[in-house]
Image (cartoon, rainbow over all chains, first blue to last red):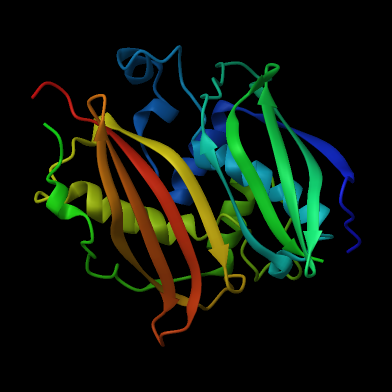
Length: 134
Length: 137
């Protein structure tokens, strides 16, 4: 793939619905009830059911995989801090997660991509970066 | 109560071998809305969490660690990948508490899970900070 410092990568947006979180609980093994029960979520002072941080990071992974032309083997590392929960309402639209990336540097055949992840106009991940061989 | 600082440096027993199937990869892709990679036998980038989460659960439920599950929040997560996980891999995860510090009533548990095949091939490392709200002392 051709990644050059300063490139803005094509932004992606992904809907997250309650049904996705239920599927993800099964797929990942993380059945923490704050990801499917409003009763439990509000009992720990959350506004309602929130997406798994790892669900949001899986959406980042989709974007990074696309930016790497589908070559997952080229991705050496990636990650983020979970700084703000993505609240997923109990309706058909759910929440929208938007993922944008900029190539910060290319060094020794490795591109460092800085990723900005927002929902409802607010950043939900901090220090989100990926290193991709290019 | 804050956690025992002596837990830093502790490595837990490896998780039981986990055999990756095409079906599980497909289930994970469907859950996250992802297209299959290649012929569908290559796992997506966050798939190592399936093994890492098992290792984290082992840590969180160990009575000697003494955390309360509902007081745990996932603070951050990072993966270093040696190669993609593929259907047929038999994986084990070994978790270590790298760092442990207490600040403002919170325990910040810095963990590292080494994910390898049962034959000993290192596949990925998952780093996670688990934030534990210690509650009243």
